[in-house]
Image (cartoon, rainbow, N blue to C red; front, top):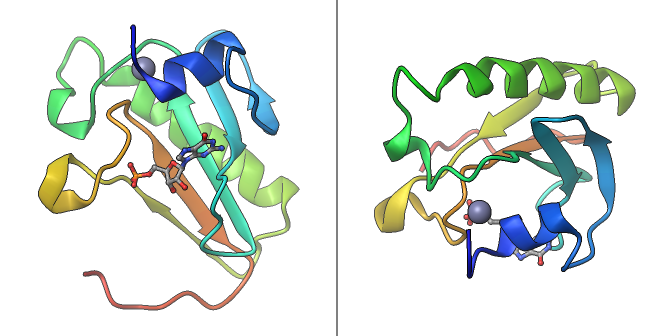
Length: 113
Ligand code: 5GP
Ligand code: ZN
């Protein structure tokens, strides 16, 4: 996908600190961490956002959650963590490539919005 920041991170055009990668998924550190552990987990196939998930492309979401659990263990988030996805302008999505924030390493604010 042209003009997509996260597609450019996947291709290596834009550098990132990768923490997990397989054929379908990439995880890397958020450039502006909101918690001691703040990792972005994304599908390598471009999907605009959660609003564009459907029966044909949503299997990747369960794989992403498996990677999240694996990373949570690796980063010792045994006291808990949060997985967030923002969708669209009202949801606060700033990068239009589906991504899941894995947040942890401290007691997180409990307000949902
Ligand atoms: P959103 O606001 O769309 O839910 O999340 C986008 C996230 O991407 C933000 O947390 C932001 O800090 C992160 N981000 C934006 N640009 C870059 C970048 O160039 N590199 C990395 N690693 N993260 C980025
Ligand atoms: Zn993309």
